[in-house]
Structures are given as C-alpha cells and as structure tokens.
Length: 380
Image (cartoon, rainbow, N blue to C red; front, side, top):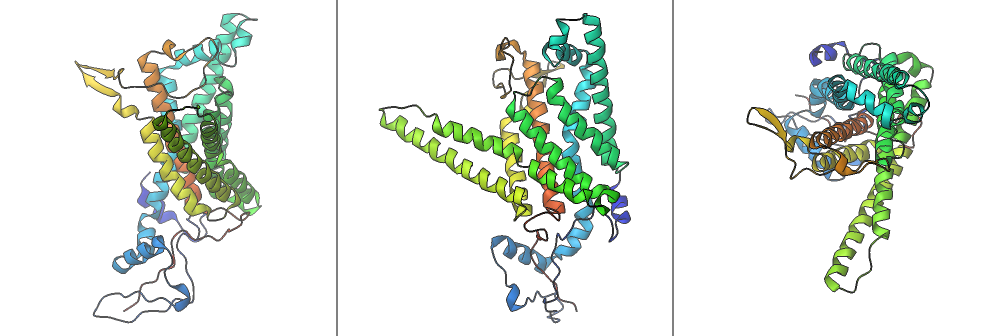
C-alpha cells in the first residue's frame, strides 16, 4: 500500500490518527514578522523544560514540527505497523519453507508428544499438519490484512489467537523469555486493534482493549528485570580482589538495569509518561536485539552457496527438553533461532512504538500525555 494514499484517507475522525502527538494550546502567542523568517515566541507559562523540549523547539525554528508530522505521520504509522508484523511475516516464510520439519517437531517434541505415545503416528501427523496449516493461514492473511488496513477486526483476532497458541503448540511454556515476548506482542496487537476497529472504540471496548494491551506490553521487561535480579543475587564468593571488584561492578550494573526496567514497566502499565518511556524502551530493545541476535552477521555467500559462521555464532537462550542439549542443533537451526528472536524483538519494539504513537488511552493516569512539546511558529 502506498503511504501517500493512506495519508489522503486520513481525517479528523479517523481512529488510526496519532492522538495528541503535538500539543496545541491557546496560550501560545503568535510571533511577528522578523526579517522574512519565522520566529518562535512562547508565553511565559510555556518556557522550554528539559533537553527533549529544547531540541524540538530548536528544530521547529527551522522546520515546522507539525508540518513534518502531517507529512511523515502516515509513513511512520506504516513503518511501525510493519515492525509489529515483522515476526509474523518471517514466521510465515519459515513455515512455508520448513513445513514438514515443523510438523514433525510439533508431533515429536511439541504439544502432541504425549498423544504420539498413545495413538498412531499418522493421526498425530494429520493433527500437527492441520494445526500448523491453520497457523500459517492466520499469520499470513492476518499480517497482510493489517498491513493493508483491511478487515482489522478479524486480522488482529487471528494474530492474537496464533500468538497465544504458538507457545502451547511448540511446548515452549517453560521458555519464560519466549512467553514474555509473546505477551508483549499481544499487547501491541491489542493496542493496534483498539485504534483500528471503530465500532469497538465507540462502545468503550477499544479503551478496555488498550488498557489490557498497555498492561501486557511491559511483560518482556518484567522478565528481564527478574533475570537481572537473579544475576545480582547469584554472584560467587571470592577472596581475589580483582574478581571481587569485577563481581561488584556486575552487581551494580544488574541492579541499575533492574531498577530502570521496573520503573519503566510501572510507568507504562500505569499510563504515566508512558509515551516517552515506551519510546525509550523501544529503542533500547532494538539495540539489544541487534546485539544479541545479529543473524545477518552469521550468513555469507561463499563458493556459490550460503554458509553460516559456525565459529562466531552462539546458541540463543531457549528452553530445551531434558533430553535435548545445544549440541543437538545443527548450525542452520541455531541461525534460524537467531533470526526468529531477532524479528520477534523488532515486533516487540513496534508494539512499544504503537503506544508511543497512539497514547495510553482513556484508562490511564495521564491519558492526555503529549509526546512532542508545545511549539508554535509565527505567521507572516
């Protein structure tokens, strides 16, 4: 879909318009003509506060921020929506190219493992094929429809259902990181659903969906906060001074990460300064994803074929069955895990950017939060 076409269809009543992204207040004074250049004049009650506001005001002196948002807002909305849907497109491609392998995985190591011991392999294969085919249809059709803004009600419902079913289907409920990221992804889908489905918004269901989505968004960060706490409390005792200083530094870093994640998660869940916090968390998460799962670094084209860098590639953190170890995975499977978690992390960042874009909703401590500061350009 052409973003310019989407922009042309937007109007004041459109549910997917960015709500209160730039503040508009009546106490802004209109500037005077000054040498043919626009001048920024603010009332005494609206003096710039904070580095972020000063930067935006400085930008507005050269180019109208409101004009930029009118021009680039629809394009940014499309990019954020694409980020949210990235993991569904990637997983759909994986399911098409590895359908038989994934069917076998569900039957032998997934939720059908116990059924395989009590019934015929043919029946298990049929059930696994049907389940995986349904998931493929839900992901592919739902992602395409949401990207094109077609039938958002059914599309979001299909993607939410598959996101919830996937950890169960692959027997990954013990993989806390995967479950937490899936919950954050569901939160992003609920946030998008609240703004795309107009009839739900009219009857108040949209506000409730946005509330639930906002409460689910910090799930991944609560998990990382718990992991930081566990790392901080499990340091080994030592009598070596250098080792002690190193351990103390790790403890301080883990505690700082813990405090930051807890405060950020609480602010997002409460809807207080949630747009700015979600924006910061989204970029932090992107940096972490590019550092932890850089699948593009492990792939190269040599001798007429694609190869993975086995020497520099590491095994990502995933929950494994008791009888399976990291050594049972071949390099391509490890590479595929990196790619999967990379796009899952990108989608989680997209979920946070949706909150930053649309706001926390009606059921929030600060429902009218403005992301960009108050700016006004003078008229000639």
